[in-house]
Image 1 (tube, rainbow, N blue to C red):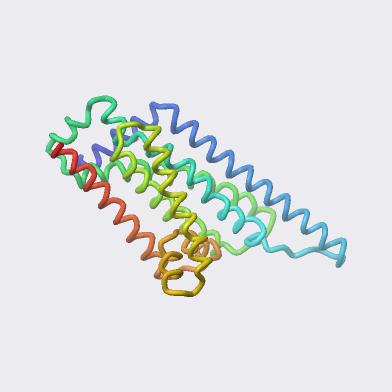
Image 2: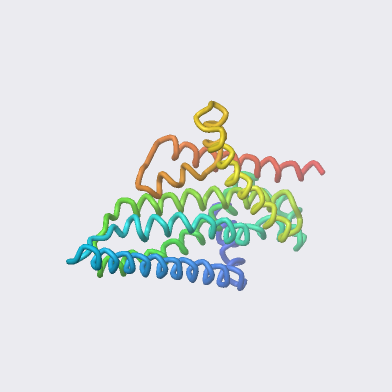
Length: 256
């Protein structure tokens, strides 16, 4: 077993012996299911209105009425859920007095950061996999285009990876788990809100730069079924940058 695999196994054991992952997972799936139900009911209401106005059978686009709204709403849920999952990663090591042991072990910092990131990412992927039950069930009752759904899940995967990397950084620079969660939430909320400033500045150079820094437009395009290289570059480069900052934050503790 490689050092990265050992850290992943250790972190996964820590998650699944704790009630946190079960509570967070249940809340995540409950919200996803509830939002799905609301948007399906809304789509049904729209169908009834169209039938009353035009007569005959209504042809509804579930991609627009259900899935696009669902994926757009889930970004705020991820903004709350993922900082809770990541807050323990380094902060708990300090609480249990195992951080110094981890730093003096023969495992490299790159391996430590990678192992902790992958462990949370695997938990997140498991939760996303369970949400696939919703489009699978709806497929039995209605026809819709799967391509925007695949790109929507791709967007949620990339957005979740970015949020996890920010949470990992927050946990690396503080000893308190609650502070780590709020710090992660604050950073992500700030990145979210600056998209509004970019919109106010319009098509100016500064406005385009600010809009690019925020994940909002990049995620929205994926939700609409559009895969653009610049959006993929944004997510992967932002993820690499956050992991680099986490590496530096962990490494700096060796000199304290």
